[in-house]
Image (cartoon, rainbow, N blue to C red; front, side):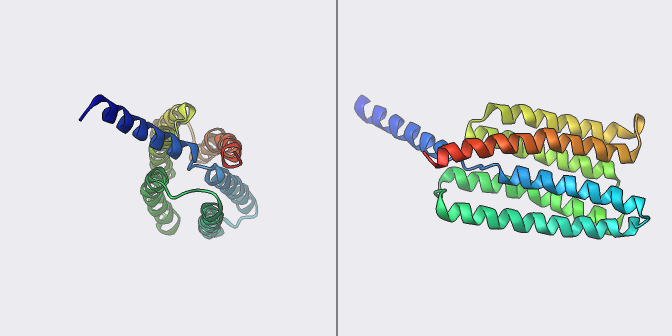
Length: 201
């Protein structure tokens, strides 16, 4: 193999990576939708608690979870059909989020249905999986700030597991809501704006 062939192969690989990243497989809609889901869920929780309807809470969260999944699937399907090419990067991105979403979904359902799991365990599981997904998303889309946000989620793991030492369970819910606002909604808006610029280019 001569030097010219090696150079052409390297350039081809670089171009392939550039094309995958240019597609920006992450559009930010999932972050925004999840953020809205948490805000609505927290508001419903406080309202039901004030009305003495605490027993309804698991059902409300499960319905909201089902609506969240449905909204994300519909929105993503429309975008995929119209703008996003099916590249290796898009498949890896989907695999990463699927692998992280499954344990979150299982843990959340068990938390609301069985009542056995503690809130701190749920929050720790969610934070750990979100940290993994954020870090790998940052690598796939070459977004450095996502890697830093991943560290924020991993701090949330420690805070969740140690929360009983310095706070009450309901305060952990408030802490997690703030975490969602800072690490989910804000970056979701940033990524969505960046995706719009790339998609319309």
